Length: 162
Image 1 (cartoon, rainbow, N blue to C red):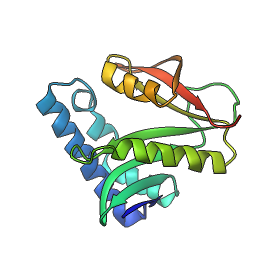
Image 2 (cartoon, one colour):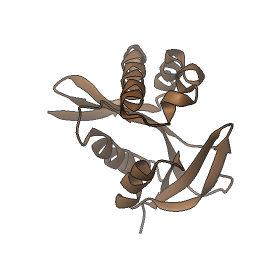
Image 3 (cartoon, rainbow, N blue to C red):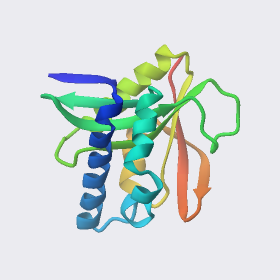
Image 4 (cartoon, rainbow, N blue to C red):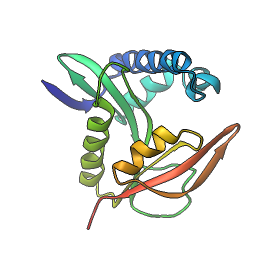
């Protein structure tokens, strides 16, 4: 059985552990992403607890196990317009949980729509062709670039309302 719901504060540590597992996977795969830019230090477990306490952290459970998680925000400083949008951050899935990230992303689209958002927005590392292809295949079009220290991202958005 698959369930998507908001994380409770006591479950935030499980989201952080997913991110640690994904960082280790990136190291093994020879990728240059979260594993090489101080991501774990910038976003410690306490950050995810605060997001869960605020009701903005979501998780996908399969057979009672957290397989994917993300944060859904109402604002993002990388986007300067006033569009009715929601913003996905920290989307992560367990390396062995095939398709979990895509399932959670689709559910976040529905959640954003229910909150009145016309767009779901996110960013992806500019040098990650695979990640950008993942989002493009799900209807997220390029909408600009962002820079945060050494990180350079491609801003992407999907229209949710006709």
